[in-house]
Length: 441
Image 1 (cartoon, helix red, strand yellow):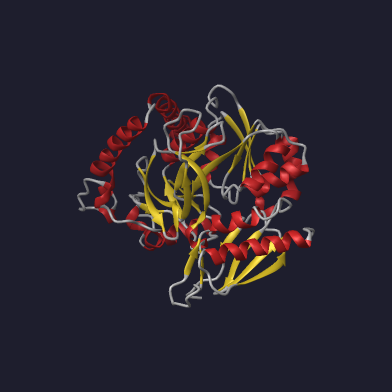
Image 2 (image 1 turned 90 degrees about the vertical axis):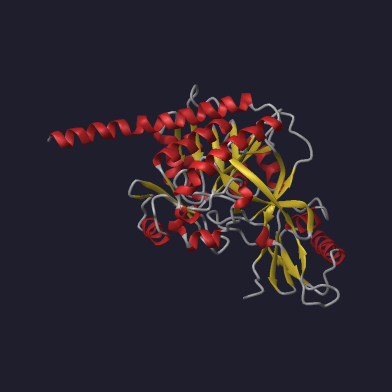
């Protein structure tokens, strides 16, 4: 009986202790927002954190043990395939990929004391992660400080409509400061839209295609709108903001961590107070870069010089909000959605055409185009998918513009087939430009 009583006391204090981590992370993030006034301030802060990360933390995981790295450049570049193949060697708990997968397949969000989660797997290689309970609440504190900085003074009602609900998101409800209700995308928006309206959230977090559907249906007036889990297209932004009456703010987050949150101006700022970014050039696009990320706040699963699949266009000028954190003009898509098409010369080396180039060609061809898909379906085959009600001359203008753009890029013979649009299920990511064909089949 005494043992059970002690266990009950420990459990009763578990959440308050965890909230301490959230509160500390929240306050630290807010203090840093006031303290880091210039790029020099940001770089000095990162240098100090990275020095500690390299000297005291990274050597605790088997993969990096004995490397003796003194700078990030001393570490190898990591990617998802390598991380998943040797998963146990990248975390301090020795958790294996198979054990994490088994826990997730069983519907569990935990593996012992660890919190586990997974990506949606749209790239064909589903990623998983492990974090501690403390790290879960640190994540909560950071994201609340950036997205809802008054969260410890004002109670918020948040609606989460995301592809998969993990213990990571549940941390918000556990805090007691934010009421969170989850709306399952796998059920479809129509199944729970009325329930969402009745809930009357003051903040909604959802993929842009879901936000757009809610905006077009009406009945909601949230103060805060956050786009997450997909690239926010300007076409969708305009419809969402007109229908819901507030600025859409992006949350740049993936299985690998939190990478950015948009300010009230709507500008996406990288979370450089918790993550260091290095940039790799993108072949075929002089103004796009792909990030290597190093999260210097993680203790359980190390993410160091991890190659992300995203294509970013960095802003040329600072944001009007005054934040020295780097601003992103747009997330343009993914590296594995860059089209590989035969060149005019007929050589073996394919021509690379990035998603932003094709997107702009179609959107700029006719103002009546409000939705589209461009899909590479074969070595020289492209499907241009447009709404069935679109006028024929607009569709032909889009096809002509896309063909002209590809010719200018040096692409040889490529078939562009017009197809009627097919709705993307709510629980799947919407990629308006994607490459389904792979050279290796």
